[in-house]
Image 1 (spheres, rainbow, N blue to C red):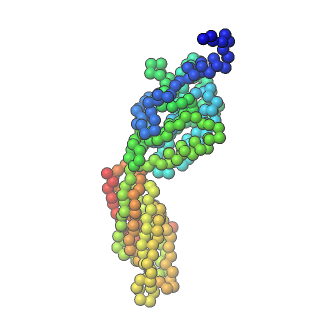
Image 2: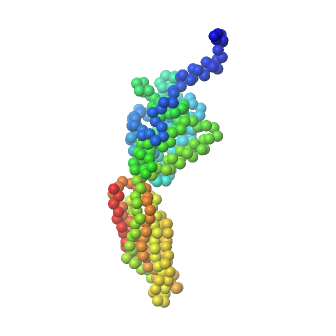
Image 3: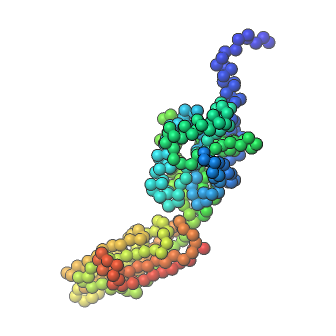
Length: 325
C-alpha cells in the first residue's frame, strides 16, 4: 500500500493534540466513589488538603489557563456558586460550600512550569477569581486531574464532605461532569446547585408533643408567644393546639391550630374582649424527621410568653429536651 507523500497539516495537528492532551478515560473516580485525601499547594505555596474541608460541600473545578471554555465557566462559578453560597451562609441546610480551582501546571501545551504559573496567576486576576486555586503539579505522581476527569477541561466534581447525610456517604462524589458547552451553561449550573442543595446532615426523628400545662390567657391580654430551640436544627416547624373559651360559660368555644410555624418564632396575640373569656393552650407538636446541622447532643425546645415587644416573661409554658446521638 502506498501512502500519500503529503499529509494534510490539519490531520497532523489532530493526531498531535490527541496524544498530547491528558487522557481521562481511565479516571479513578466517578459518581458514587469515595474520594481519597490529597494535598496541593495554592498559588502562595500554602498546603491545602481535601479533608481540611470536612463538613463542607466541595466543588473541584479543574481548568487550564489557555482553555477558552474555562474562562466563561470560571466567572460563572465565582458569582453563581462561590459568592452565592457565601452570601446565603451555605446551602439550604446551612452547610458551607467551598469552590476550589485545580489549575493544571503540567500541560504539554502550556510551556514551562514557571510560564504556566505566571499565566495562571494572570488568569486568576483577569477573571476576578477569589476562591482558592491550587497548583496541580507533581512531577512524580502526575496531575490530580488524571484521577478525576473523564474528558478534557473544564471539569467539575462535587464532593460531599458532610457526615451523616441520609443519601450520600462522606467524601462521596455527587456530581462529575466535563465541559461547559455553549447553550447548556445554565443547565449545568442548575444541576450543580441541585446537587449542592440536596446535602443535609443526619435525620433526627422528632415527633415531639410538648405539654403546656393548660396555659391560660384571659380576654384583653396581649402577649408575644415564642418557641425556641437551644441549638439550631433546621428546618423545624411546630403546630400549636389551643381552644378558645366562651365568655359566658367558660366552656370551649372552638378548637384550632396554629400550624407549620418555623422554629424559632415569635407570634404576637391580643385576646379579643368580646365573645371570649380567654385562650387555653393544649399542646405543641413538632412533627417529622429533620436534618441535624450541628453536633449530636442535647436539644431543648422551650415555649413561653412575654409582654409585647419585651423580654419580660409572663409565663414559661413548657419545655422538652431530646438527646441526639
